[in-house]
Each structure stands twice: as structure tokens, then as C-alpha cells.
Length: 69
Image (cartoon, rainbow, N blue to C red; front, side):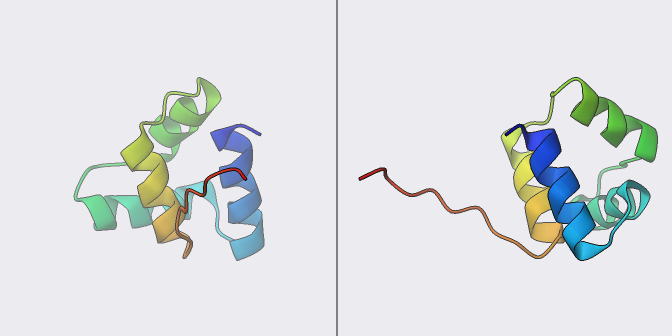
């Protein structure tokens, strides 16, 4: 699954639009996120790890890395 698909699933679960996500990200990070900019990053799969982490946190989740057994 791609980061775009993961984010879209979380947005649907939390009933949040991409526009709302962009606003919340702007508040959290102090950077300016727009619907257009965020959509583009998702479309061309150019999110940085820290941006993905911020998105997940804004949506109320956390990233957890676990070792395969």
C-alpha cells in the first residue's frame, strides 16, 4: 500500500477532508500547507517521512516500527 492510500483510508476513518488536513498540518508545523500542494505531494508520492509522520499524528495515530519475526 502506498502512503497516499494509507492517508486516504485514515482520512475516511476520521471523516476529515484533505482541506481540513492541510489546515491542521499548517497549525501543527507552522508551515503553509494547501489543498493543492498536499494533493500534488500525494499524487506524485513525494511526501517526506516527517510529513507523513505529522499527517498520521494530526489524524490521531502514531507510527510504530516492528521487527519481522
